[in-house]
Image 1: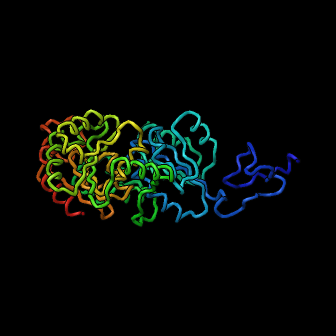
Image 2: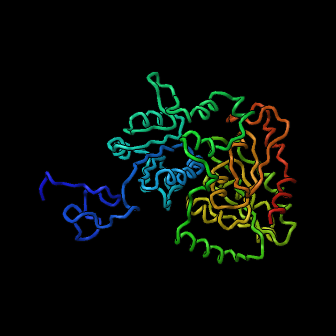
Image 3: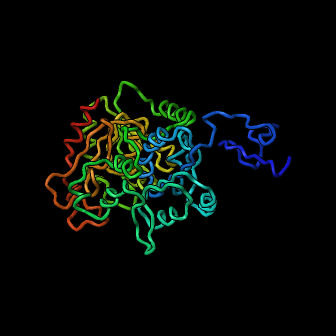
Length: 380
């Protein structure tokens, strides 16, 4: 093999480290699997790092990107805890975790297009370092200030610096705004999230273990939220009240859902009921990770939740969703016609996006519990 004749295949499978196929030398004999699907094409990097819910909510842009660039290779970099959100995607060629090794690799690739969804100092600083012919989203200027990278990003940028626009005027969903930011055509695409064969088999096995009956209706309660915004959850007492109301209907079963931070809360809720009621309440494990959590949620027909990662997971799993809002913006969530949003009426301080409430959490105490029951029953 002559160094001067070295012809590196522009194929997604070729690494330059070992053969793509055993005993096949693409350098000597040409690409073994030279199809449109495997061509590198347009090289695209998506930067979406912060909050697992945001990462999942951003996945619909993948469909738009593929329509615009059918022959392309898509890389996505995200925080470590969100990597599993993107598992099994058929539209992403490679997911990078946010670490030194990944950043080193990505800095050394010449991209055609870079999309940065995040308005954070570190995401924008990294976006500055990426070599790309076109950049969309957000960058950092010479004073260390976040700035829009393109005209399409201006509306999203203004939302961040204008509370009246964000809290009172805006009626666009977050995913529509992201399409505008990236200057992509919006077609109401669904989230890109899949349970694989092993996970689906696990769900079916769990259904057998809990004596799942398709004649019953399973109401999921995503009871908690992350510690970052602790006021995105109802009180334990509100959950207990709602469950008691649902248990008046003999065909209804309750599925308690959540993450590690919700373990104690779910146990308190579960143990507040006597033995007869407990037989109709499924207290799913909360310490088995995101993917298993999705398997447990997949049991539910409808999911009751605040504006948390559990909300986005329920949307991704195409569940009927009843979601209440207090500190966050209802207008920014797309339910795809499967659910209903409940927001406090005539409450001047909502939404606010504050971590600490100076008004005795009125947005939580004013949640219309009867409405939640009514909407859920109507969904069956």
